[in-house]
Length: 599
Image (tube, rainbow, N blue to C red):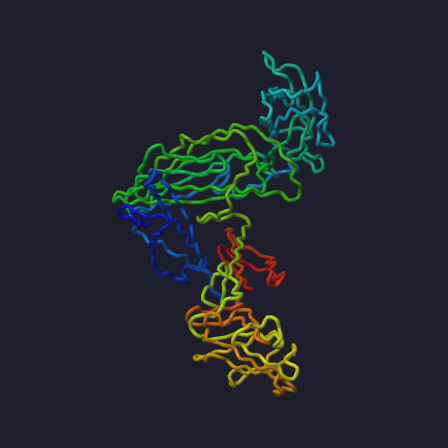
């Protein structure tokens, strides 16, 4: 944590102030480590006394060298007075920590195997004529005019289990031993309780394949949204989750936390603290947010959270902690995804877990009451905390590095077309042999001289080229030729001759190209000079400028699960080389190990 300013600083309009941080990095220990930086600045606009705040993020990752195993991680050095660590995790009710990473839509899942111990339905108010379920043993009959979209009804199952349910509400029937079917009666609500029967249903509960007891299927006025049996466990469209936000004081002194805010796609922006709260050195505080998620509506949706906190240490040093977290609801790709129904559910907040420091619940958090599609979602950001996954979890990453030139960043590549050599004279010139004659329209004007002889190169497949009378080289059509010199004169003289039976034959072309590198000499990248096209140069003023660069694409597979993974396929579809299958046979990757392929 660095505070650059000891006192306020005035910055004029369109002016820039720069701060720097210098460090040494151990590249071996830091292999495959991402260094993430968060920069926050606050300002008071002098003219109108408005307060503005800006925040930016930057990261870079150390690539793993070829044939290098990944065994160590960088060490965080202790000793900072004010150091707040913000952590975010998500847990499904009755699930394991970070179990939200395994959420998936149960759309179309059929109850098969053991008989269910519970059945969950959504009351939709539909009549028997609006069925989309054709279960073999299903029966439906409307009575006394049918439901007619009654907002509140009584639902009775097998004559015993009954409950009053609003339209869009959830009804759950529980039994130690459901029979082969259940009989459902839906009635009006009277002053004395159950009123007139509006609809009767018989639904097969054998949970045999083909009975069509599938999640999201409609049975008259009831939509089937969940079940539980020993074979398949708990399957439900609605999942209750708890988001856990933790602030830990990892500094060397007590910190007074003044702010703890989260941007949540579930509840919007929440401020957990109504007044500052002190965290002793080494302790932490936790806040929770409870919500229900409709997994069908949220299929293929990424829920992204951003949690940030700010505090001040006893020494007067201000520090911030920022953490981003996301999980994605996957989708059962064996079925299509029809438009889901919207369910109205009132979630019940879970009490906070007991911890060593007092746990705070948000007094301002608004619990969502409508399970509705979430459309405004930030881009996916991988959490920075370490998460160990059960089952199978592979992480695939790609990176690109320029291996020629001075800048290794592929994102900084720019076309050098028409870049002119100006300033110092070149130390290197690179041409490609095109086979063009002197009358080629791409030839520049000015001090350039070109003369064809014996018909000129005329796209001859093989020629011999010499520059300034030095030893030359035999080139094939389209091949590059590089010439280096510590002292180029104002011009270079080039001779191009035919090659016959591995012997240099008659001249085809002579060239004189100005190499002073002065403005207007027209020594430009992609310019043609007779049978040669300039594709690169290097001088002290401009460095290396080349139309052709070499890059290395690196493809990483990391095993994030708690057990070995047998990788059976590693395929890349590349615009450079087409489709590549890296594995000829399965490959075992241990926990937290990484395998790299390059192109």
